[in-house]
Each structure stands twice: as C-alpha cells, then as structure tokens.
Amino acid sequence: MFGRIVVVFSTVIVTCAANDTNLTVGTRTGTFIGGLNDTYPDVRQFKYIPYAKPPVGSRRWTSPEHLAHSSEVIQSTVFGPACAQYVSAIPTAWVLNITGNLVVNYGEGLLAGEVVQNSAEDCLTLAIWTPANATPESNLPVIHFLTGGGDVTGGVNIPTQLPANWVHRSQSHIIVTTNYRVNIFSYPNAQGLNGSTNFALQDQRVAIEWVAGNIAAFGGNPSKITLWGQSAGSSATDMYLFSFYDNPIVRASISSSGFAIGRSNNQDFSGTDLTFVAKPLGSDFEDAHLELQCMRHFPMARTENFVGQYQDNSTLVNTSQLSISFTRQVDSKYVFSDADYAERYLNGQIAQLPKIIVTTAREGSPLVSYPINDVSAEPSEDLVVSRTLSTVCAAYNTSILQNEVSLTTYRYEWAGSFSNITPVWWLGAYHYSDLCMLFGTYLIAPGEISDLDVQTSEKLQDYFLDFIADPSSPPSKGWPEYMANDATSGGTLAQFGADGQVVQFVDGNSVEGTFFGKRKAKVVKSM
Image (cartoon, rainbow, N blue to C red; front, side, top):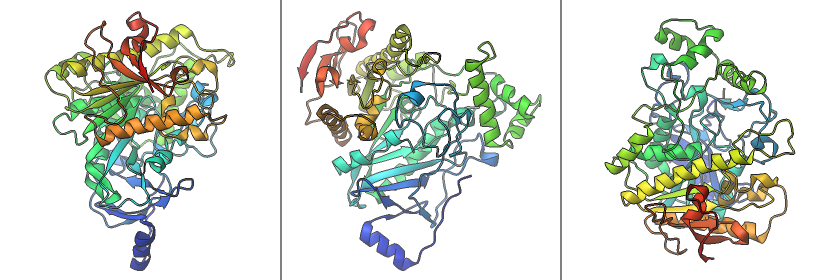
C-alpha cells in the first residue's frame, strides 16, 4: 500500500523553500511541498494531495469522509497510486495503437491480466498544476478535471492527460485532476448496502469541496471553478449538475464525450454480481450484511483479479458464461433515469450553469470490438458508426434540453486525424483524441508534428480558456452559442481539425450525421 509521505523540516528550510521557489503551500488538511515541472519550469505541480480519508478496512464501500484539520508536512512531488483497477488481457486499440492513454504502471505489461500494481484502495488524491509564480493573491480560474475509463479504469497519472504544457502556455489558469474509486470498489451494488452505491460520484463531490476550500492557497479563485470530464468523467460531470443543482460550487461545466442522458447504467438491482464474486472468494453467507462484512476483509488484489480475469475469460474463452459488471446504478440521488433527467431539466432541478458539450467525429472507433485475429484489419464500420451516433445523439438531446430551459451552451466537434495521435487510419478523430490537443500532449506522441497540429492545439486551449475566464460569453474568439430546437435547426458548432482547417463553424445537422439524414457539412465561416 502506498503510504502517505510525511516529512518534517525545520522552520528555516520550509520558509526558505516558500520564499525562493513558492513550492510550499499550507492548506486546512496539511502543508504540501511541490516541485517544478522538468520540461516546463514555469509550471508548479503538486502531484499527491489527499482529499478524503482512505476508504479502506471498515470504510471500504462507504461514502467518502472529509479529512480533519492537519499540520502535517507532506511531500507532493510523486504521484500517488491510481484507485484499485485491473490490466485487461483483451487486446484493444488503447493498448496496441494509441500512445500514453493508460495509467502509468511501472514494469507491468499492457496485457498483463493482473491487478494494476501501481493501484491501491488508499487512492483518494488529487494533483494540482499552477503557474510557478502563482500566489494566494493570483485569483486564477480553475479547471477541475475528471478522467475517463468506463467506470473501471483511470486516474491522475496518465501521460496524455498531464496538463503542464497548457499551464505553461497560458500562465493564467490552474488545473486539478482527481482520482476516484472505480469498478467493484466504487460500484459494488451490494444488497447489504441498502441502495447506497455510486461511491465515485460521491468522491468527486468531496474532491470539489476540498478544492473550493483550499485552492486559494495555490493561487486559484474558488468562485471560478469549471468542472470538466471526459467519457465516464464527462457523464459524471453531467450527473453532478443534477445531484447538486442547488449548491454546485462550480460555476460552469464541460462534458467531453459522455452525458447523463443516454448512458447505460447497471441493472443488477438484486446485488447478485457481488454475491457471485463473494462465494468463490470464501464469503458464502445467505445474510447480505454478513456477506458485505466478510468481503471488506478480502485483499484488494484478490478481489480485483477475480473480477478482471473472469471478465477477460468471457471474452477470450467462454463467451456464454454469466456476465458480471460493476458500474453506475440508478439510485435517484446521484444517478437518475433518462426520463427523470429530462423532467429535472424542465423542473429547474439542474444547476443553472453555462456548459460546453463535446463530441468527436469517430467516437466509436476504439470502443467497439477489436479485430483480435487480424490486428492489421479494422473494426466493423457499422459498429463504429452506431457507437459514434449513440454518443452524438446523447449530446444532441442534452443540447436541446439545455436550449429548452435557456442554459448557455457551446458545442464543438473534434474532427482532426493527425498522424502522430492517430497512428492507424481507421481510428480517425477517435474518442479521447482531442485530449492530446487540449493538454498539449500530442507533443509526446511518436511521429511528425505539423504546423496544423500546433495551431489546432493552441486554438482549442484558447477557446477553453476563454470559456473558463467568462463562461457566459467567450468573448475574443467569436464562438457562437449553440441554438437548436428541432431537426431543421441544427445550431452552430465549432469543428476543429477537419479539412486541413484549424477551426470552422458548421451547421449542427452535419455533425449529427445520419441522425438528421444530412452528411455534408455546411460551413458557416472558418478561421
């Protein structure tokens, strides 16, 4: 288990570090000693900041608990572990074709079929990147980012999601990235919990509360936090606006390739999947509460390996075996049904905040079944289109509801297919690939970097910065609000990277594609 690193310095040394390099920051829950980024020394980073009590032992499968006041001095120069997760043995595009999109797991194979060795239950930590010269008087806007991973993987230390390049370029904002529980340790859906589940969504709230209470010490403005998520983190961002509509803390949101509406949620309301795992591990109780108490004592790795290896087996060997899954479940508190989300929109039970909605042109290309028996082939194009449209339709339906209740909404489509981040042609503008441009991490991918790469990345970064600086009206780039209310009015979207252009503004009907039966983009204007 990754223990918290507590270092006691003399007053003279701590004071010197604070004065010379601004690397020591005191908060309510401890004093953190950060470092300067190796590549961008004008960026200050704090890689390890606990935001909640470790959810271990008797706190496994319980709601996160706030940390007490503390005067500990904590080294924050090394990332903490990712939350407990598994390295699948199933070949995917993420493993075989795409660079730097998985949590760093030193020394373990990308198809290991084992628990991620650099993961743990004591994982509720976040990381912060600021300009090196930021002070408590800086009052910089803050992006709070939630990573994706389908509710089963993900975390802070993912190379293409590290934001030092972006902070280096702007010198005008702060980025926070958060670990939260995933898979069976977040979504046990256990009978013995009496409906209490969805712990990741609760983790995220506590992390936001910690940031709001402490970010001023790092130079951030707690009244200028924008919540942004990608994929599973994106749908969580969307769901957050309903769960905490009367006290959202944040002042704007960005959802990239994932939405509350249109998401498939876990249907195992009887808790049989947890029981299925419990029995072979040795917890064979008829009483659901005894089963849960017993399961709290099993080693994390043993539990994670059983779930992961069983699921791998159902794909690789025995496709007819019983399916088990540990993902979000409707509880009408943190997760609602699609019908409830629509009703809550119309009843004003959503945070009244501006929003950016993001999709990519080929959302489905890395998400459908990979051609395991012929890795030089491409996946089924019909499946790619179908999976892409499911995300695009969810984005459209969300946009229409946003317009219906007069919530400021901006939309963009990522349509670039640049060789260094898209190494095989059929990936195209795949789900996740725009993150490389936003974080500026296309620079670490192999291959030639063109002027178009650079210009498109910088333009995307600047559009986002305009939004977090003034979410109600991004002023300087001329990005119009998305306004659509039926199939004949598609609204206007910013489209990045298509046709050799940095950005164009196009009619939304072209992005919805076969959803509207219109395929050719109508260019409103380009830049």
